[in-house]
Length: 314
Image 1 (tube, rainbow, N blue to C red):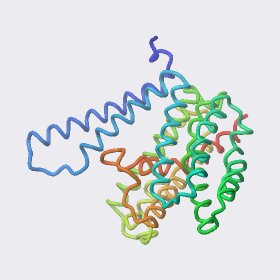
Image 2 (cartoon, rainbow, N blue to C red):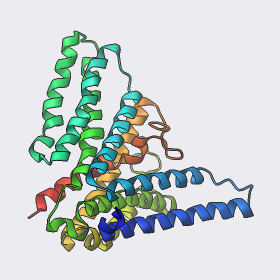
Image 3 (cartoon, rainbow, N blue to C red):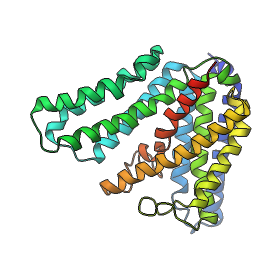
Image 4 (cartoon, helix red, strand yellow):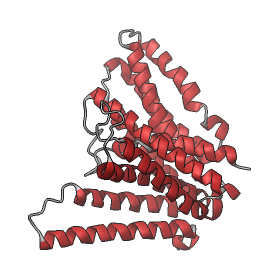
């Protein structure tokens, strides 16, 4: 089957552009190693290699069929929640509660698979949030009860519930999706979220003078945030007509929402890592750290962008 011909053209073109940029980055590394072998390239080579794998798997997930995309995003959720639960301190008494938390992951993605929005939206924040403390109560352990339940619930809320909205974007249809369908909405969100992270970093390094919350993230500056916000809204303006069916006002609002929420998603995960006294959430992605380090902004942008899109659908 020629899946390229069945894949929405704007999404295919976006992937080709991204692959081209990665190839150019790889050529730059090769040239530097040939002409200046003593130059320290830092973590640029492993980062480029990891990005190539990420983009390749994402292309396969979005290009072949919806079921593969669900498996892909579900696997990312699993890796993220595994890193989260490995990062926090757990007790022997928590194991049965954690088992039910892990078990809820495939169930949550099953609701995405069948498109049952009404259950998808309440399964974790209502039923699982009520079930998990009951399961721990049955163990009979009261010391550290509140901390164990709350950390388990928060990991489930972000890594599974929040991230699963990215998969549900691919299930949306109609005029709001534009010419690229649900895959276009996913690409729009991913490009703007990751682009916002890069833009904030570049603007912060170039013009950053005033730190926003130095105790949480010393490198975050007001100039970086505002520069990233402006850049992301410009990207939304340019990419909106390609990947979505939004009006101009809706497109700019989406850009503002993604830039702002992505910023705070990054800060929240930074606060958690500082509380746990770890630099990275894992080592699964060379040059990037863990999966959570890469998707921290998406944990906020995915659910909020999804509901923004869902509620403006005609």
